[in-house]
Every structure is written in C-alpha cells, then in structure tokens.
Length: 341
Ligand code: COA
Image 1: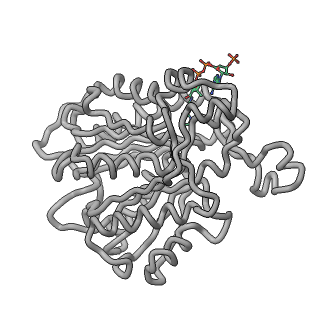
Image 2: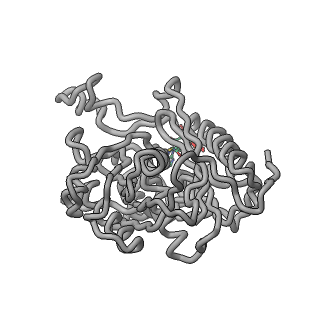
C-alpha cells in the first residue's frame, strides 16, 4: 500500500535529539568460496544455487579470524569516514549470532581491539535483523541519554556454525561485517524512523539448537549436529516476504513518504527471489533495489550493514538521499528503517 507524503521533506518519527549516520564501513574476508567449489563439497550445482538464490560466491573467514576481528576492521573504516578516533566513542553495540564465544560479549572484544575507552559495550542478538535493532538502540542512547557518538556493528562468522555436509544450508551463508557511526547533528535527521517486530511462535523455523542452556555442548550434542544452523527454507521464505513488506510499508507510513521518494532500498541479502518479491510488492523499481548477495551470500546481521556501506561508497546514494533498509531473520525478527543519508 502506498502512502501519500504530506511534507516536501520526510517526517521524522523520533523524540529527542536527532541522530545522523556520519560514517559507514565494512569488511569481508579475503577467501572466496565459489559455487563451483561447493559442487565439490556437496551434491549441488552452480545452476541450482544461482536460480534458487542468486548467490554466486561467499567470503569465508580464516581459522584465526573471528567475528570480533571482522567487526573491528569494519569499525575502523566507519570511524575513518566519520573522521573520529576510538577515544570519541561513547557506546559500542555489536549485533551477531556468531559471537566469538557465549561470553564475554563481542562488543567488549571490539572495544579492546579498536582501543576505545572503558565505555559501555554490549551485544544484541536478533539474527539477520540485528543491525536494525542495534541502530534503534543506539539512536535511543543518543536521543534520550545524551551520548554523542555510538558505534553500531553487524558482524558474523557464519562459516563457524554452518554444516558443510548439508546442501540445504551450506550454499546460503557467508562471513563479513558492517559498521556505522551514529552522532547527534543539530542540522540533520539521519535516522528518520524505525519499525521492529518479532514472533517467537516461529522460533523453530531457523535456529542453532545446541550450545545454550537447553542443549549444552556435549559429545552427544556435537554428534547430533546441534551446533549447526538449521532451517525450514520454504516456511522461512514465505514469512520473510510477508514480514519485510509489512515492516517496510509501516516505516514509510510513519515518515509519510511514498516508495518513489526512496533513492535506495536495501533489503536483507538472503535470497534474490525474496528481494525481488519484496521489491515488487513495495512498488520499487529494480534500479532502487540494492543487491550484493551474489558476492557475499547471506551474512545475517552484517548483511544490510555491508550493503549500506557499499551503496554509499559506490555513489549510489548521496547526502540527502532517502534510504529504506528492511530485514528479516530468525526469532522470527524483522525490522525496517528510513534514513536520510
Ligand atoms: N543443491 C541442489 N539441490 C538442493 C540444494 C542444493 N544446494 N538444497 C536443497 N536442494 C534440494 C532439496 O533437497 C529438495 O529436493 P527434494 O525435492 O528432492 O527433496 C529441493 O532442492 C528443494 O527445492 P525447492 O523446493 O525448489 O527449494 P526452494 O525453492 O524452497 O529453495 C531455498 C530452497 C533454501 C533456497 C529457499 O527455500 C530459501 O531461500 N528460503 C529462505 C532461506 C533464507 O533466506 N533464510 C535466511 C532468512 S534470514
């Protein structure tokens, strides 16, 4: 459903001080795993993967490279774009389903790696919607707690929880990280509105059952493969399209803008068919849709953060352009945001 905009300038939907994104950055590991290489690991084909998902290759982190390393590299690039040093950061939030370890949190490890002060640092787990959840939390610290500079990161080493013998899942995922620096700017409204949602009734659709308090790690849990990601692909697909469309429409309504005013739509990069279905239902043109899925596969919490960085650095979005980000993931969780870049 399209909404008519009332104001020439998009409306913002937040109380308190406005929050701008002053820098973005991303990092993907060097190692590329192509569909042709996957053909040698499992019974699959480049043709099947390409037509069903749109993915051609993905990045795989080295054995000695962890989620916090990817996150710190993306963070440094975002800090460089924002023109800030690590000492200026007042809060660090990392969204991830593949933290370096259950505790301490990955944000603390990033704090140490980038040389930030002893500022609060915590993780958010909302799967592929995690970066949008983290953006909204970071925005709220700026709006209501007078924090000046917040570092928000989506980072994943999904290769560590992928079952490389399961063709249903191993072709879909990849590693990487994306980061954003949030700062209060009196003269602009970077983040205009966000919508977040979740449905725990569908938790079973996408999960990693082992390693928590329900199925602690044991020889049996490892033998049963409970420490690998599992997914009901078909049901996940249907829920993804529905939830992403409704979150996107709701956030556009809150800003009182029409999809035609959005310069760049950044959907979670899970499957080309999901992206196209969402784009079509929203009334977005192919030119509006940002797609880098063919290069990286699904990088969960890092997905839209990497895409945002690439959209900015490639010049697809310029200062003042409106961006719609929309994501969906395990939980189920979903979210959407409108950003004036
Ligand atoms: N290579 C070859 N065949 C494969 C395969 C692979 N990598 N993976 C699965 N198959 C087979 C299955 O075994 C099944 O075979 P069967 O019919 O003999 O049992 C068949 O392909 C399933 O095909 P189809 O029903 O056409 O698959 P699909 O259109 O549902 O596509 C997904 C499968 C996983 C690509 C799709 O469901 C999907 O993308 N879902 C959403 C996943 C997602 O985005 N998750 C993250 C959300 S954040």
